[in-house]
Image 1 (cartoon, rainbow, N blue to C red):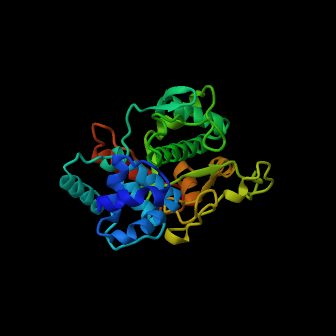
Image 2: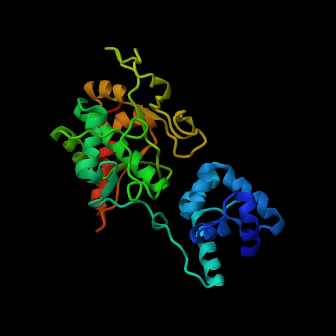
Image 3: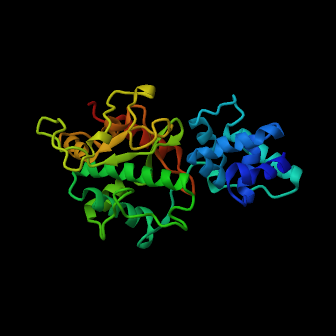
Length: 319
């Protein structure tokens, strides 16, 4: 298998070299395939950028999700546990160390995380996120700021999960195509981040993509109106929707399992000014089946804290 893969690699993929992590990942996915089928299988895998990137990183969880997203389903063969078992077995047979991505060990943990940005390294919760709130929606109402804090945290952590060098050796950009962060943050911005510290949005056990845009300005009676930024087309309204009923946004590939819609910042502001809390605001745009989780502290998050967070999310205003 390994010999056939290496022989087909260059012509099928168009690259001269393959790294050990990628080699192990591809071997785990194609294990059991006939040698004559390997070139065509490789071309199919690397035709999709999402699948190709996941294989390059070697993270079995990202690979499993990418394969499911592109419609390659072989029962349980491409679940993370199955891929991981194959990697271990292949490494044992080849008498080589098994390469393990940081993401293979589970969900992210919340800590005194410092991220690399275009302005240098910044403490994640204490500096970067408050500056995102300032850059994206400085004058928002408190509950809209809290909703934005959760969305922004989810957005960047999902991006860092999907692009393992981001925030580490690749700087996080400061732009409207990603997230804007201001030069300084106000105490109100810092308070919104502190109130929601570590809270992210999940669906089906995975971080969502958490897209958000300015959206249209809302009228006094709560209807989208003028759209000076031309971003209302990306916004989704998912109040009361669950599962496959949730509208996805064209900002991301609609076949992607993490695509659960897009929040309007102007809409969030109107809702906050009319009594909605951050939990209900987020479900208004991303769906009623969004789960709120607080990322694990390195020392562990107690069951009581998890229960309190669940209660907070459950006590949202009925809207």
